[in-house]
Length: 347
Ligand code: DAH
Image (cartoon, rainbow, N blue to C red):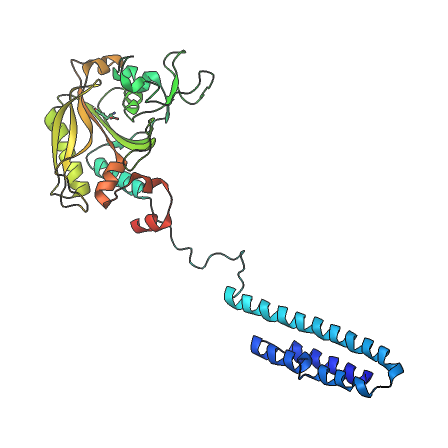
């Protein structure tokens, strides 16, 4: 009897190790330990065993049953592991370079910024840079923006605590506050203080305001600033330049118009509207795109330029607004979410 039981265990071991699928496992289980299986058949022979041998024999059979059950459990675990493996697919070597890494693409804001700079370089502008951390002088005072102007309010502007120091941002006066620039117009002042006219600069960059984020507002956004200083510059030159850059960027059908406005650093001042109904998703006839005007003589005087000799124009506009128009994007938040499904559309 013992030999028969051992033989059964040995045979089961080989059979179970070869199993790959659940149906095979179920039939092997039935054959080994089922009601009509081999172990049950052997147990039925117990009746023929002499009474005194029965306890030892019962023990043997129970042990065999236990071993068979262990082997069945192991076989089932290995089938389950195989099934899981099949679902997961081939194993991945995370240390290998990605097979589909592909070339990266430019961010839509980068594309518009670079295109605008290219358009402006063609007519003699050079790119100028300025710090994102500014001081009140460059951001407001030098731009003729009085102390009681709303833009200077802590509700609108991010000021730094008085104890904070930025060694790489020059101050005009020791007790000025640092702040995150609310516009790129501060670069006008930094550029003019570096040397005499003529000046023809374009300065794109990040700007910050205490805005609550929604589809058209963001506390951090981008602007593009231009300043032209020379002799005999007129509003006509300003309008011609804006017509040229918007036609170049958005297509010849694009029209621009000026609406009288007030900015403390230009006189006269205008808001600039665009008409570009040929663009996707543009439904309104006129869309406000930025501000502009002729540099105020007080600004020239402040940087040491003789207002009797020098004239100039300046303008600033939002880059997000331009990119939204150009690409038909209806929510500013897409620009900052880094969602590849969005970004990959601007290859
Ligand atoms: N700085 C203005 C703003 O952020 C835009 C602007 C208006 C820029 C008139 C200029 C300008 O250079 O002349 O709303």
